[in-house]
Amino acid sequence: MEPSLLALGGVKKSEMKGPLLLAVCASLFAAGALGQVDCPNPHDSNTDGAVTITDLLDLLGLFGDVDTDQDGVWDSVDDCVDTTACNYAADPTEPCAYIDVLGACGGDCEGDGDGDGICDDEDDCVGVVDECGVCNGLGPTEVVIEDIVITYDSVFLPLDNDWYVFPISADTTFSYTCAPFFGACGDPVSYQGYDYATVLIGDQCWFAENLRSENYENGDAIPSGLSNGEWSSAFGATTVYGDNASNLETYGRLYNWYAVDEARGLCPSGWHVPTDGEWTQLINLFGGHPAAGPSMKASPEDNPGWNGTNASGFTGLGGGLRYDSGGYDSLGGNGSFWSSSLHTGNFAWFRNLNIWEPNVQRHFRELTSGLSVRCIQD
Image (spheres, rainbow, N blue to C red):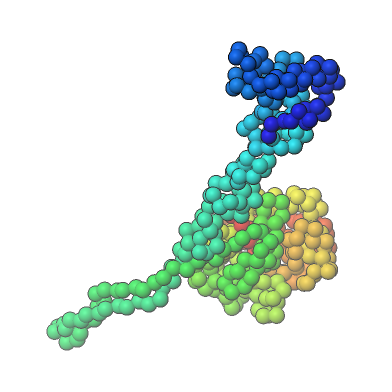
């Protein structure tokens, strides 16, 4: 848009050179009225054969002002004179703005890596969501065996007067399914038919309730229902306190340390039994071992509840224990939780909450003792 003479008359430059501007305008008007003469018109600065508003702007530029972007606004009062800006010819009071990666004038998006029209800062997935709902995932990877067909052959053994039957081939039919997916900490984790609550504490993601599974992660059963004598010598065992099924819902199961240390895994894939150091990291967030007890115990308002404040969200409960000799003790009074860290010999580290004191005790117990277990994300 080229500025009109009327528009230029409103520019503040007239305050400093008003009489000159009027004289120039009159001269140009007269020149325009008389038309071109044989010799070059001194006011035709761009020599295009006509005296226009552009020539007037060039003339006024000699007196200290220009219109670099030719938007009809003097540079002295124009906040944007960059012709590469997307708004250089718009409102002169606006600073220059530029096209962002999404094509928006003045937008603040710096990247759209997957070209989906969503700025990377706001995009839930910079890439492709696979059919399992995982960003840039591999798709279904869990093998599901649907059928196994085994072909046999046989041979008669005269010396034995009998047939010997043996397999000669096996044909397995299988498909793939999506692996269990855990989104954000605070979402439940489904494991062996039960949904465990989770909680983010500092930068650690914990189960917010005690483990209750009867199988290792690979599906093998953990020995249970053991007598006192069997319990005291078991390499990997679990029980419900007092062998009373009514305690399972509230307190989960108790495990000896051999089950904790088992290569087949006690916690679900992507989780593990916390180390001694990981327990310390959690406890230090709430005043260390002398003071962290109330913050880690369930409050009376929780269901089930205890006598803490549960400021951590850990929701500790007094699940009791089973001694290495097989006897049970301290249901409702103590909550004891294994670490995966061996102490020495036949002992491993654990943490204990109790109903009477604010401290969290760090002790070690015999590996055949039965304690509660919490899982922490890898």
